[in-house]
Length: 181
Ligand SMILES: [Mg+2]
Image 1 (tube, protein in one colour):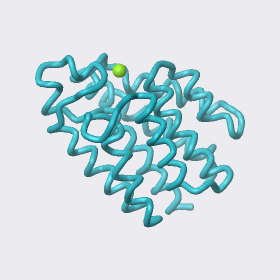
Image 2 (cartoon, rainbow, N blue to C red):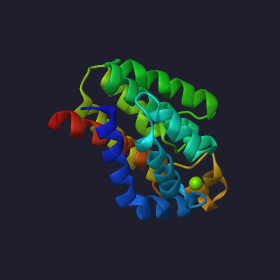
Image 3 (tube, rainbow, N blue to C red):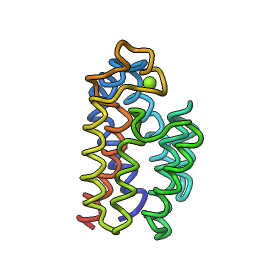
Image 4 (cartoon, rainbow, N blue to C red):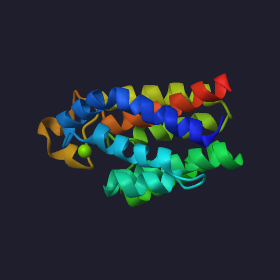
């Protein structure tokens, strides 16, 4: 499975789910999560080998573009250069927590990424996807402590975090495409 194929498939997937991702974000933030991801992925799909995650970061922009770009960089390195996915995503998690000043339980992408990283220590991507999905679902009841969602009534409790949804989508697509390769 090439990085090129993965990024193209992810762009297609996000294009199809853009309205849903925007609606999730509208409940907690500014309603642009799907649009922002798609802008970054459209640029990534046109970028040269090894430059896709960087192109994503530049085109999507803002804090979330950088944070998702860190995850996509590790996936790109894994697909292109055979880099260890578990170590890469653990590195991305640490950098996201540092740059975003976020930790598990804050109602963010980290609530999907962190359990996935734990599960990947056993080397099982399917288990990591399941763990990410459970973490994503758990964000519904969480009260946001970071980002715009913390200013929404009740800290956004009752709404799923859009970043946890898209993070899980990225890992699920990787598992699907690796299984099919
Ligand atoms: Mg937003």
